[in-house]
Length: 134
Image 1 (cartoon, rainbow, N blue to C red):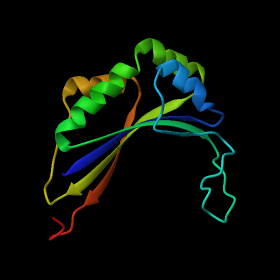
Image 2: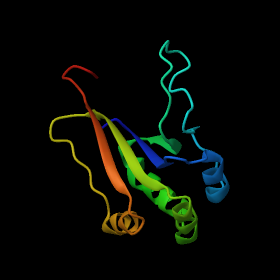
Image 3: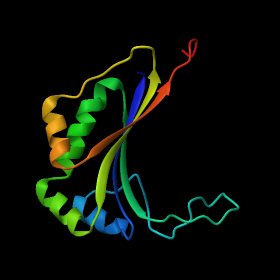
Image 4: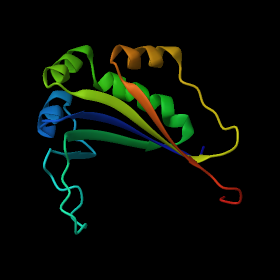
C-alpha cells in the first residue's frame, strides 16, 4: 500500500455538524446538513438526506494505526455520550490506495477493542494498483 486515507464520520438524519464541532473541539475536514446541495457543480438539484461531520487524515501504511489511535483519543467516553444524545452514528472509512497482490496489514488488538467499545464499524475501500502503475 502506498497511502491511506482514514475518515472519522459522524452522521444522523437531523445532524447539525456545528454541534459535533463543539463537542469534539476540532474543525471537520468536511461537513453538510440535511437539505444541503450535494454538488454545486451539478445541474441536478440533489440534496443530502442526512447530516454528516467528517475528519480525514492522510498518511502512509505506517501511519494507519496512529491515525486510528488519534480518533479514539479524540472521542472520549464522555464525548461519545454527548454524540449519542444527538442520536448520531459513527464509523471509520478507510481508503487504501496502491494495494497490490497479497498486500496486508494488521490492527492491534487494543485498537480493535477501543473501536468496538465505541460501536464503530470499519469500512474498507481498496484501490488496487494495476501492474506497471509505479
